[in-house]
Length: 121
Image (cartoon, rainbow, N blue to C red; front, top):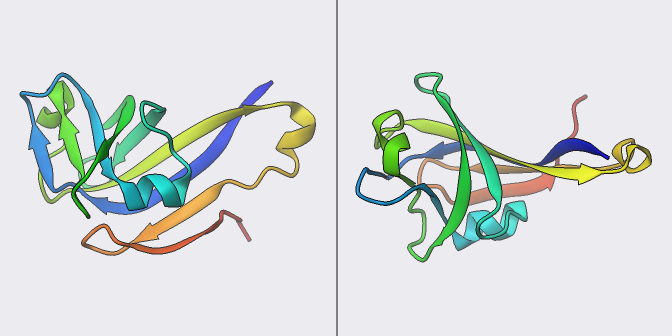
């Protein structure tokens, strides 16, 4: 088994940074569905604005477009910053050659513009 990219959500805007929550990143249903990321799934969050990176888990946010960085990570991911969210899957080496990750492209309000297979040309 090898670990391979399952989904990448590009250019998401942090709408809230909340120190008083025990941890995680909360994502709206639209982003979870478009990416195939499940509630409590391990995700990597990369801050395009300042270069910070964390590993955490995703939870559901019922508010459309609301993306919240919670807990200690809120000191490194501030409201208004741009982030990328990545999830990985374990596949056997034979599957890896044909596995297609999902790429989710969003607008500045975190609405899904497009969800498509991630290919590098």
